[in-house]
Image (cartoon, rainbow, N blue to C red; front, side):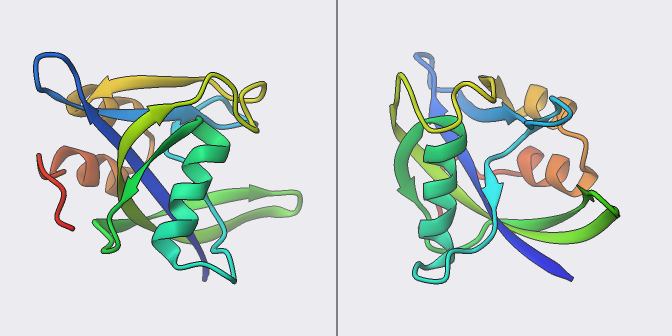
Amino acid sequence: MARQIAALPVHRDTEGSLLVLLVTSRESGRWVIPKGWPWPDREDWASAAEEAREEAGVLGKADQKSIGSFRYRKRQPLGTMLVDVTVYRLEVTEQLATWPEHDERQRSWFSLTEAAAVVAEPELQELIRRLPSESTA
């Protein structure tokens, strides 16, 4: 099975509520979290943070310990492949005005309930629903 890494970008709003940043996928426009293939020269958590910069235009502190994983079917030219995605929490410290994929994706902040409702993967929905209010790093 193929393996990817992902960031779950979070921050608190002015009232202290935890929010999750989602981006749209390039092909289908579904709401997803920033993810990609592991980078050979970086730890997985650092690769996840870099994916968040490229896909969502955010910088922050990634937990070095995964908060969980989920599986999804990645569309390929010749069908689909099952991918296991390891997720790392990313405390967002800065939102960039432009980033590598800003012309290809939308980004938006959601409450935990809203984010869990708009992502398609049941395991990702559960990860978001049970996200601790504080980093575990």
